[in-house]
Amino acid sequence: MIRIFISYDPREAVAFHTLTQSLLARSSRPLSITPLALPHLSGIMSRPRHPLQSTDFAFSRFLTPWLCGYEGWAIYMDCDMLVLDDIAKLWACRDSRYAVLVVKQQQTVSESSKFFGAPQTAYEKKNWSSMMLFNNARCDKLTPEYVDTASGLQLHQFKWLADDGLVGDLPARWNHLVGDSPPAGDVAVVHFTQGGPWFGPWRECDFSADWFAERARMVRADSDSPV
Image (cartoon, rainbow, N blue to C red; front, side, top):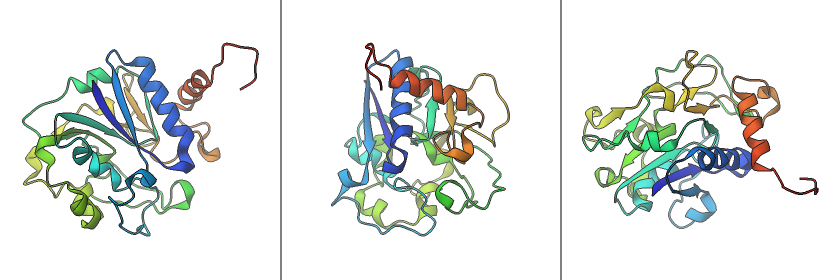
């Protein structure tokens, strides 16, 4: 069983469900998919929303190891993604030498804002935490208390680990940043980090046709009833 935790923001519900569809359609292994929705974490997380926080899931992702009882492995994904290959291939990248494995992008931020008009901020290791393969037992510092009180940079820059050597590197195909990553023909996970096709200004961005096709497959009905 591959355990997957996906961020959830009600303003992007269609993105969450389309991502889930893309995972189910291509996986060769059984999946356990959990949405990280803030109402479900009431009493666990109580930190106030930060002015630079554009989504509900900026910090809840770091509860993944705790939600797994610090056992086994788990994948975390932002909801503004689309999977184009078998997620079992990512699962096969598990390496016990590391506490967490990520795609180590060197992202350049040129825009001042992104979806919902939220500010676009630049910082070291930006988007590394948008797709994480957690070795849960080695992430036991990520308690609810720590996640609720640590700064954004402490969390997203992996300062909860003893050193950067515990952060393993995944192939770039597992977190392709639309509009930022160089063109590639073997993309496994598309990340609409600036804004996805479900927002008007990005309806014709790279990979938007793939996203709309996946959404269409999700709402398919084998009947004459309209959907």
